[in-house]
Image 1 (cartoon, each protein chain N blue to C red):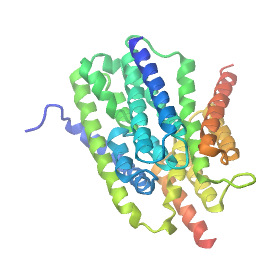
Image 2: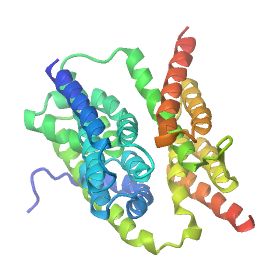
Image 3: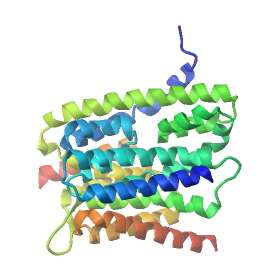
Image 4: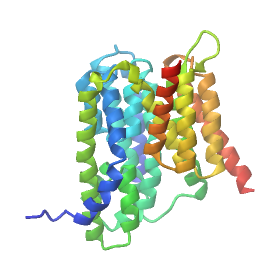
Amino acid sequence: VIAATVMAATVMAATVMAATVMAATVGVATSAAAVLIVAVITFAMRVGMIQALSGRTLPPVAERTIRNVGPAVLTALAVNLAAVPDSGWPYVGVEAGAGLVAAATVGWWRRNLLLATLVGMSAVWVVAAFG
Amino acid sequence: VRPTWFDRRAVIESAPIFVPAIPFGFVVGVAMAESAMPGWIAWSSSPLIFAGAAQLAVLTLAGSAGLWAIVVAGMVINARHLMYGAALAPAFRRQPRWFRWLGPFVLIDQVFALSVFRADGSPEEFRRYYTTCGVFFFVGWQITTTAGMVIGPVVPASWRLGLAAPVMFVGMVLVSVRRWPQAVAAGSAAAVGLAGAGLPDRLGIVVAAAVGVTAGAVAESVAGR
């Protein structure tokens, strides 16, 4: 209970800090704040469960939901970073699209991150060379 | 003289798992060099955050996303550590208090994967093994990301290393997805993420992730019936 309270307080404090610093200019202060806040949150998440679970386990529903978080966030991030924000609908360019599809296919098929990344980037280079 | 926390077997078992992390560390290092952040602050993410995917998000989003969006992205990406902590909690329960606080700092994916199968040994054995893995990956990560940061600016733009991060993220998702509700979560996040890519402050990431997790939870309840 204490650990959970500490964690909740840390996350709340971090959010308030974030909101405060956001008003400041982009630069050293904002960058340092971003790194420090994410560092604190990362550590809180690593240590939180170990401290909190002294004699219990999470309900299965919570564990399954946590497992969906990673795929959802990383996919959202990948598409957002690869997309070209247009005045109309945003779209993913041919080079980036080829890389994403190749990485996805190889990742699913071979279950090997290194191979998926290499093939994905190779697809980008091949399409770029012909485009 | 060998320090008492050292476990040679942990090094032997960590090394092959570290090799695939080298290009990833390099990508993060390149992102440090290209980040809108001042270089030394970008670099400090390696010793302070010590989580590749979260670092990559913080480094690449800086300059184009609001601080709160960066923090939320970092927080959500790292949510899987809650799961690691929950899984290792029984092993840590038998450890001294100082180790329960310090040990989790190096609880990265690889250290979790290696040590979760050692949880049944004696507390001392587990501590030696876990600590050696943690130190090995921490030192290795500093070296590879720093190398990427130094070499990164020399690489010509035609190599399109900026696309390495999204390509790697998609690879990570597809390598780890095992159950179809996770695929539903990823697929809906991709669709909403594309539709919302034009939103300011990269707000689309947060919206897409929320929709993805919700869709995944709905799929879970359907699957559970």
